[in-house]
Amino acid sequence: MKQCAILSMDNLDDFEAYDELLIEPLAKYGWQTEFVSWRATNVDWNQFDVVVIRTPWDYQDDAPAFLNVLADIERSTAVLENSLDIVQWNIDKQYLKSLEDKGVMIVPSLWREQLNKEEISTFYQHFNTHQIVMKPRISANADNTFWLTEAQAQARADDLVDVFKDKPFIIQPFVESVITEGEFSLFYFDGQYSHAILKTPKQDDFRVQEEHGGRLTTITPESSLVEAAEKALQAIDEMPLYARVDFVRMGDNFALMEAELIEPSLYFNMDDQSAQRFADAFVARMARLYNK
Image 1 (cartoon, one colour):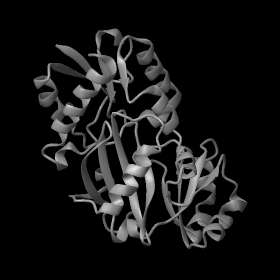
Image 2 (cartoon, one colour):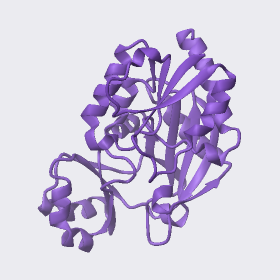
Image 3 (cartoon, rainbow, N blue to C red):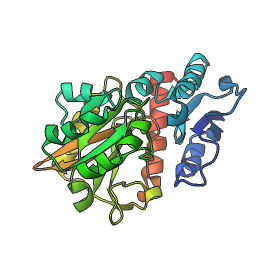
């Protein structure tokens, strides 16, 4: 059987992960899967035909080490999916700038290398808003993500400076529809649409992840949302094996929050056929691109 490593983290006990649903459909195609922590040492990546990045949800704690592991994989005979080029591009949220330059509507954003306390009030003036979101440019799981009124930001200024003293960060106006409607996620496998969900935060929160109490609903996306998702996908230089594109409604349009190309949850639990679609796309891609 062909060998596929599923790149994960040491312990997923505090997370909701669904990649075990890939084992059976991949096995039917002659692929044996093995879950491997990205922090594992002395791994011979040559023993695998393919390494698929899935749940290394602590990589942001040491992004350089994570990238070094991916570079080791790419130097081996194993195929890395998604590729190191995609990961290097996607790991810093500045990738949103390049998508915006290609005509993709994103949530309005400011970019800073470090936080100056005296500058905090200008963020609210810039966006003409009473609430902003601040988050690191390299982050996952909503770590160090803050939803703040100006009064809250001023009161927590010292703490914020401490968080962002060595973390380049992004500032965005808080989008009210995140809590009134939710965040839309559309999933694509090798460029083909698979399924979509709506993620809604719990009461008095804005984080939509399950680990933070977010609620998930399977949806049929409206045509304008699909158009926005496919426009974003086509703006990426290299078609990824897997992609999750997250949108929020802004007025009559949908704005891209994130194009998740490194370790997005693909929520195979939300669509009975999605794991099979992934396996179909994976096997077709291996045959087409790598003659595996």
